[in-house]
Length: 242
Ligand SMILES: [Zn+2]
Image (cartoon, rainbow, N blue to C red; front, side, top):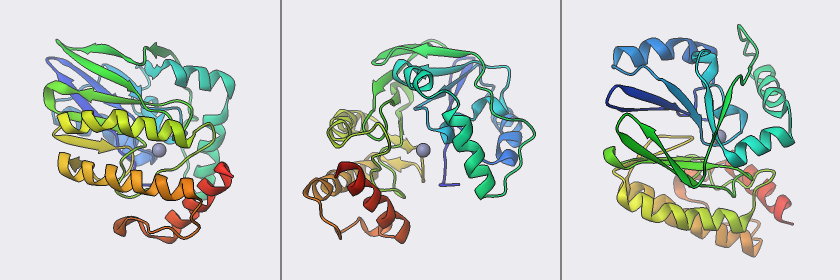
């Protein structure tokens, strides 16, 4: 669903899973697929508290879920919201799950800040604007940036509840030097990008935010993202800002 990505990072003999796939068969297959590639996650992390990023514990029920401080606050502000949204989408797509989502033990992570993975450091950068919470994970030693729901090649910038245009712009400005320093950028949705591909999307997204701020009802959308669904997201962005 929505080309949702999960990223496994490894340093030394420690591994971490960032975000999650959505479908039960993907979640069930994930531990075996990762183990076959030499990844056995010791920890889970979600870039933000939207339900489609929180499902790691359905694949690894024994692991604690790491969330940035703003995401933990959001979960406290809206108790049960992620579970309700998951149920709603499961109903829409006729998805049955062996067990409901229990977030279990949540570990609060500092944002901005860094955490250790093996002998390496993972940088956590604030990434709000899409929602009120959010972080981007920079694994500098291997050149990978996990941007959460930013810089997607399949989705235009989406200002969801709690998000804001100003914060979204600030996040893009914060992501720019990280993209410059990365070899691969993995968005929450859609295929991973090279540095140049990600920089191109960043430019397109700044242009889109300009059009959104002007209140354009029919803006030029990036070629690969000019679809009916993205037009619908644009209308919802306009409503939220209006
Ligand atoms: Zn998402």
